[in-house]
Amino acid sequence: MHARTEKELHWLVRPATIRLLWRYGFAILAVLVLLDFAISPHPYFGIDGSFGFFAWYGLATCAAMVIVAKGLGLFLKRKDTYYDE
Image (tube, helix red, strand yellow):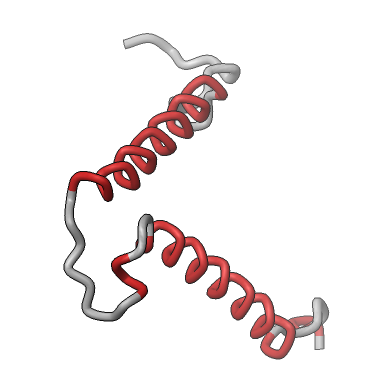
């Protein structure tokens, strides 16, 4: 076993690994959206048969959850001095 130096970073926080993970993530997303050409949808509602529906619906839902969470944070957060009182 060798001693780890302080400059040695965990593999998940190395810049090269982060770039690689982003590239793989975008490649997987692109393949999944392109599979919409090969797989015929069986829509239950009218809109869920549109091209890339699950990709843009997932993005819109995620953005809506972030916005709602930020709004809830305005009402639920406490002052910085909460524990000092």
